[in-house]
Length: 337
Image 1 (cartoon, rainbow, N blue to C red):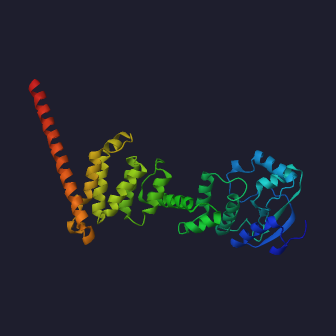
Image 2: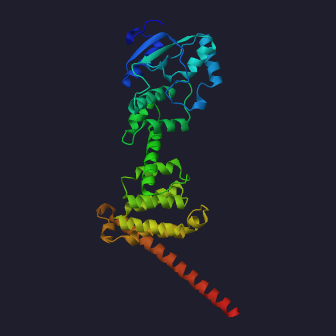
Image 3: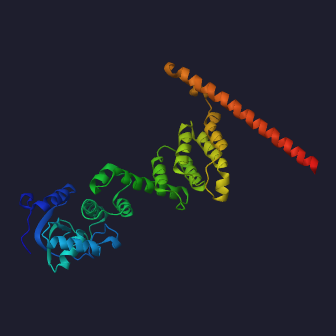
């Protein structure tokens, strides 16, 4: 095996960006222009097993290598675990090669502990997401779940793995939702979407645990869509205290009772939506807090109140007419009997 290179200035151009990223994650390295081909079965698990060195991609790489194309070096730990470069390694092997240029890190995989294994996965994940075949969304999500901790910065994890910050936030917030749901005894049945789980993860600090748990259970039981869930959350967050929030959840559960009972998802009726919207006003203890204090907005506030009162009076009149019609129809049926 050729002598190792340890200085950035001595590296070939295709190896420099790799060395820079290795350095950013805190690893030391040695570069070998000719390193024995790695055993791809000994690797830091970043990709799903079924996506490892697919034959079609290996053939493409092998042909490109045969044509003289330059490829980034592989990355191995000191005890020869492959961190990045499985497809390149197999392509070189297909060409009957015995060596491929590689960086050897200054750490071992075996006995390294969880923190070091996490850093190695971050390193491998960052390269897998920026060259060759990108990982599938499901693979990326599993990787984020494996390398992140609840107090990590979304931006920091996204930067290290070279993926969108929104993807990291979705995975980490969903994990927080699952953990708290388990703690509160809310059994998730798999019907909530990733967006639902992300939303609830972001609400953990906003609600008390009884409100959070009751809300999560309601959304699952009632098969609420994400827009419906967001609408209910607005009412909860506008409420003054926990009893008022629990009352809103109780009233909403009643309005979704047909869906909860039958399991057939459907949008709540407009009348149910109206009761839900008015629930905040009905449950408010201090109506003075609903007065507009800004003089510039007072006239508009009064206009809206007047229009709402006028419309509610018309709704009330229509409800009264319907109720009397039902009574009359009931009386006629009784007489016929």
